[in-house]
Length: 236
Image (tube, rainbow, N blue to C red; front, side, top):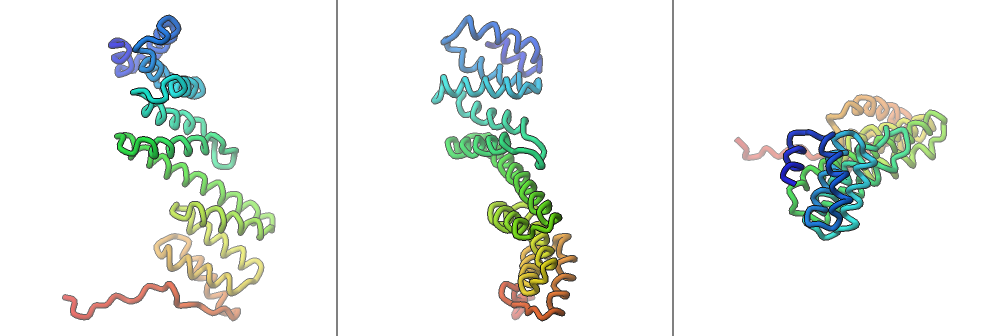
């Protein structure tokens, strides 16, 4: 195993994969089986053989669920799923699998050194899924199906992924849908929400124009949620 560890560090993945594929069947159940399986999975991953890597990590977790290398295998399985993730316009089964895997890793091993990395992956995955839901809303909006579009903008992006960069984009999409159907009060309320919550976003400029249009058509603007001016009394 010393050679195998060195080969991985030196990125000699071809020889490592060939050697471990010979080693594992001949030494099944040995004290090195768990580590060898992990190294084989990681080497396959580095060769962009993600499905085969996934199989090795699953084998390790099935055979050694409480083993020394189970935490890292749990994390690596998430990477293998994520590497198979498709563009946001396509099916996201592997993306959801990766999200579930990283969340499981963080939950089960909260003190592991890879937790910060897993949390970054979780946020990136959620941002990608937010993009997919926004694109769904945009597609329905183009078709003139504003009810369906609002479902994706409001119930999917804003409700589930409101902390991602697609929140102001979805709010603007929602506002544009109300503009199309001349629902002036809902347009005003949505624009006000966007302006208050995301004052530095690019979408604010369009939101301000739409808000003025809504007001010209009789909509009122609530002051609720508007930040109060800073109290400078006594300040230096």
